[in-house]
Length: 254
Image 1 (cartoon, rainbow, N blue to C red):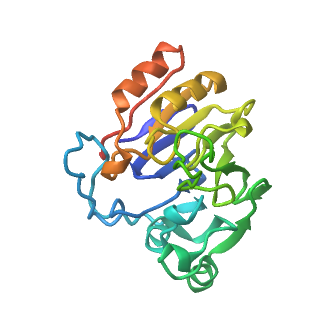
Image 2 (spheres, rainbow, N blue to C red):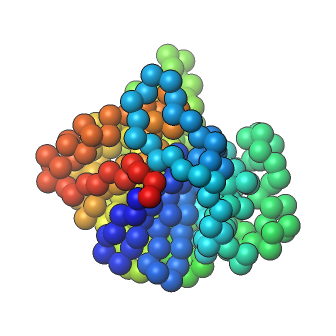
């Protein structure tokens, strides 16, 4: 479905893919993977989910496409959302060979005619007229998602999150990350909360972060796509609302 907030329309299309637009500029976060845009996504077994599910999506209307790390890099997904003159902002650490999803961002951009910006871990740029700031995104080796030996799914330097501003509305997509000191004090109006827990902040940590950020709206994404990403979105929404922060669930397609 479409969520209307301030001057923006927002859709969660599945996994980490979100479309945001002010009617002039269209921004996508982390498009694709697991069949969420090709129409092939199937609900994971034994997961009670209202994750968006729809037919093949091929809008190709995105002015700006943001990619946070290897796990969310999907050339087919990018092609499905990016306009012919789109700007791709891809974290400099994204490695298509390591991810197993060729071609590289450089080859993809050259073949399709996109502009490509490789962004560092702590950088501020303007892309397609949108101010973008990258933020570290990782699992703390001493945190709740670390193995006994300190190994983690998302080590420091592996990915980023993004704070970007569309028509004056500051949006935070933290990427696949624990709650980190870098999140404190951010000016955020729309918080796209990652609540899947097993590989990033869980719903309790995300709700506590929402309370500290005090945004005008929280919209959770990146959950229930696969069994290891299961989350209780209704419990999250109730927790956030109980802290006095507006929250909405976008779990449909139409």
